[in-house]
Amino acid sequence: SQQGEEDPQALSIQEGENATMNCSYKTSINNLQWYRQNSGRGLVHLILIRSNEREKHSGRLRVTLDTSKKSSSLLITASRAADTASYFCATDNAGGTSYGKLTFGQGTILTVHP
Amino acid sequence: SQTIHQWPATLVQPVGSPLSLECTVEGTSNPNLYWYRQAAGRGLQLLFYSVGIGQISSEVPQNLSASRPQDRQFILSSKKLLLSDSGFYLCAWSVLRGAASPLHFGNGTRLTVT
Image (cartoon, rainbow over all chains, first blue to last red):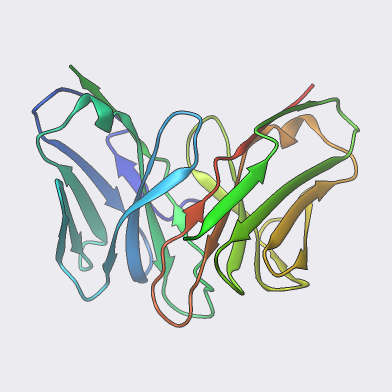
């Protein structure tokens, strides 16, 4: 089963609005990563947050991590039509020899209307 | 800079036919390599990963196999395709060396088994 579960499954907003996506996971992690996927393309890494970090920023992206609740959120501020894509969280699970294997959630489909 | 090439982009194969998908990475040495499958544009499932030439770990039992004949070449194969092998196959690399490292994905191969 998937470690990360995103919520909502789909999100539709207007340009200029903020978009918030949530991710929950079940086991302890080394880090949590967010990826973006345009339709029919490969995934692109957006941001990585380590288990000892609580918040991280990158441009219009803000990621929070609450390890006590085993959850993370991705906020995209001032969204643009070009932000339309699927967004996935992925966990690098703690323990053992992970070799960077990531467990992906089912993703949130974000549609930004111009 | 590092690049990853994955081909073909699309493939339509009859049930029972063989499969060979190839992935090559440029601009880095001794990368970790991964094959993921994505069904219906949703979450990714890790199929195989490799930390070195000839070293392949399988994550799920299935009709597929992987090989790494050269440091930066990763091949996904099947002797006889099943309908359930249809999906979007993604190759990725990372340079995990005891620290968190994101995955870098190719553009994927859309496989349809008819």
